[in-house]
Length: 270
Image (cartoon, rainbow, N blue to C red; front, top):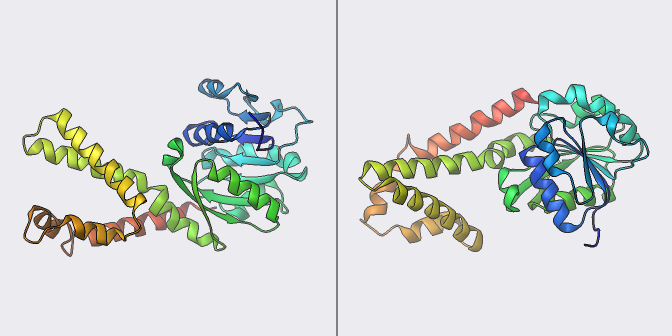
């Protein structure tokens, strides 16, 4: 496969880091390194990718074009200072860590570090994610284009100039898959309560949620228009929506949930 992506240094080979690495490999990745001490991370080795337990195990002559931070936020303080020589060598830092600000990362990596802060979501595992990214001071057009390509390997990408928007983005799309999974869970539970056998209830819930999402993605219509198209006057769906759309039900609850998640993201920011 022709290499279309330059050498990378991935810090963290967990679920999201592993999903992104798979997407990069599909595009053709130059020899790269993954830093992760977990034994399970060794499964990521191969196809030009070496897995090592610590930053100090990466050869000093290795010059990545980008350093991708995919570790848990609480691990950053210990892990990031060791990356300073690589950053000073010209690498752009692409962070997908929740709750870590550009200023906070530059405090650990050097005041001049070019940092891009991004928030992907878990559908990246099947290349259907959505990532919102924000470039920090000193990020060149070439570096932003590289980060855009890395993120586009696992789904759609949108850019914002206001880093403060990353907090509500985290609440909406970062946590969004959990809300959708909860819907499937509740549909399955309600179906069982109505006497539908569990295997069929699970099939109905999963395929309905997945199919509706695919229809929404393929349609140019607003979600509200698609909802109305399913809702026959005085029919069964209208009766259900009367409950779900009551003043204290979904409209208010979803707004409250996103507000709570946004506030928590801001509390965690550092």
